[in-house]
Length: 361
Image (cartoon, rainbow, N blue to C red; front, side):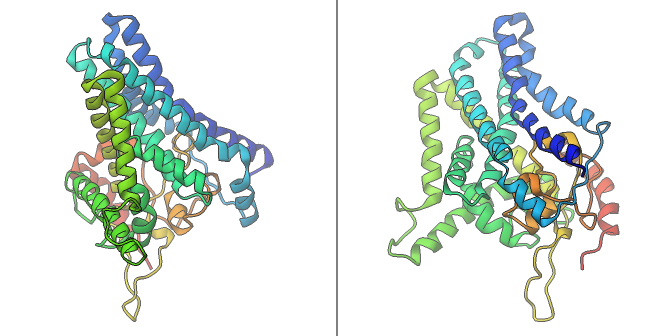
């Protein structure tokens, strides 16, 4: 990249906090003009409909940064601020959504569904995706804030399982977040959610059993702490706006979690790690994750779709991730692939030829 291209690349990630804007605009319009109550669907329409269509004509960006450039991007204060701003915008969005819930409940049921669906879709990006970036950072405060964001949609256990489980077991049958060949999204998503909660609890039980604190139902259990924080979020919702707000919090969080696990389904579908001559598991390579280099959607998702480099070098900051041609390449962005995944025969028809043409050493 030229210096100008690198500068524009850095600035592009400031599009990410704008993901919440369609939710604010849509809900405000619906509340101000009940005849336009369908606007509660606006965030879902923009994020899952308009953005994927814009991504393709806006083209792709291939990054091949040197180690020195990657280190500089990782230290860049402007870039380090992006996840923090996104996270604060999300917490403000969630708080506002809970606050206006009593007014939303006066709308027709179909538009209440649109409100919850839109909230969940935005949460999947701004709480889970941003939280995912932060839990990989070196500083404790960043990791803690990542856990807070994940807990705000009821998935704080992801902080425990993802870093200490998924990144070690990816591409194996022991990993609940790796979709197996011919496994449908409908089978994968519940398996991944249950597996994440179970393995997070197991990891903490094992950790505590090796220390001075015994048992896993103790205050030192990180998985339990994040679950309690989610319960605190839920309790605040009830206090502020009643039991309807609890339903909004729970169902919005569930939608965000399902969105994440559909992304997990896409990221590793059908890819597996073999063993060496001694039976030991081969190290994680670029070939064990699907990649996509669309400029627009990677800016909004802070490079989540540049997934192969993330798994090979989990500590790299989002902006420092490189493209790798040896990784299997998705034909479209995550939002498009998620919808295709909901039609298993069509998904297999599109992905299997690419998978069969891709060999893993």
